[in-house]
Image (tube, rainbow, N blue to C red; front, side, top):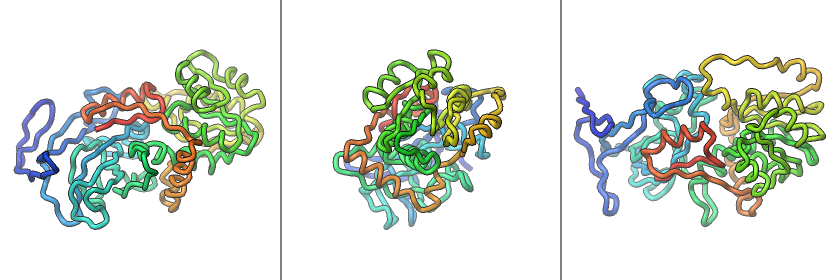
Length: 371
């Protein structure tokens, strides 16, 4: 029988823990953020609870991880309800962590990993185990894996952004599904986010005219002046359909959709014959509490012979092509052809705040939490 007590807002398990010596520090407890219930509307701080738990003695195959960076991503808002996760659960999220101690030859002490074991601080992990954050089937998140080798001087935070899942989302989603050709016009919504900023830059490398849709003058200026987009549309200023027509006078050949809703309807009304649409997300509707009706797309899809395909980036991992995307993105970063932008919040205790800010669109580029 285990007994629980409340301490400083955290749930603490009263049992003997192991003490790990790491340099001048001693570690005997780990923390994790728990998602208490399915979100209703925009997540709030009360939806989360911080649990403090003892660190067990390492068993065969296990490793002790100390995170350096955590990622907050839109998928963590919609996956639990969409794919049947059971509550309460460790909050979804990935991290870049150092292996402090190891009883697993594949993950030696001092090495680094990328783990989708959720919002955990120091933790003992079995890389082969199945955790409550992974999910099942085609949407299952990856197991713990050695960190992709980075060029000298590149921050490991990029393993959660440009040189990680968001980078591959942009790379494969744009090139495989939209297949942009030189001289075509590419529009990307959510253009100032972790994926959108990369989609636009890749499209420019392929010789396309690029229009980004974002919220606010500052983000739009960043897209054009710093990332090289040809035009930017501020969806907060009015009619997106008209604004896209002005920004893309020859029509839209490829649309990378991160947001759904009215914004996407406005873009699709500007598509050219045989246009291609890659549906990555629909973040504008993630926090809706009631169903929202939109105009039927079938008439324009038939009339303009459009192709629309939704995707989860994990399909390319299952196909054994994950490193293909990371290697190309790394090459572009080294050559200075792809720029990185991060919004960084410090402190494990601030993960829920960072997550909510990301959903509110208060980040430019990748939202990262630094240890």
